[in-house]
Length: 183
Image 1 (spheres, rainbow, N blue to C red):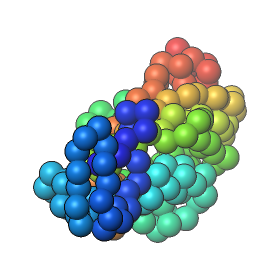
Image 2 (cartoon, rainbow, N blue to C red):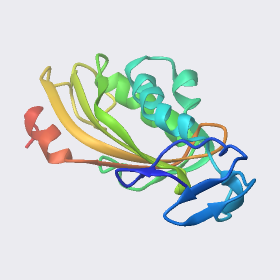
Image 3 (cartoon, rainbow, N blue to C red):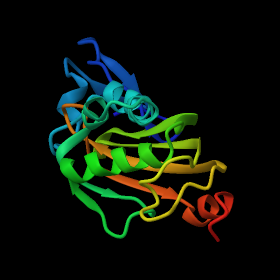
């Protein structure tokens, strides 16, 4: 499979003409004949587009639209949570509580996503901003009225339907708490 800068590039079938590369001949073969079998794959284009869909889901306020980016069963680890979420019901609660606590929350991508097509994974750095004007998140904390600006990175494993089956969020909760005046 062709690579560029260490990352898997989107592939298309090789033409059925003879190709020579450093003395190796390939006759009448498509690229897929030379790929190692891996669990069901996700199209690299879908992987490349996933972070934008996920970040947009957070920036809008419709829970059903947000839930469309996650699989029915998932493993979602976020440092702001006491334990990983594994169901859409838990994800629904997380989206809803976060939007209640931070009604103006937005998430923007930083740079371009990094795609590992062989493992159906994609990573994206992001910037999250908002103001703590509502109750709901953090649980039991009254609104501080303070704005925040936090950076982080998420790593997703995406299924063939374009939904995350695994989300690992990496960001510093202490930075958020400090900006909100809670520590």
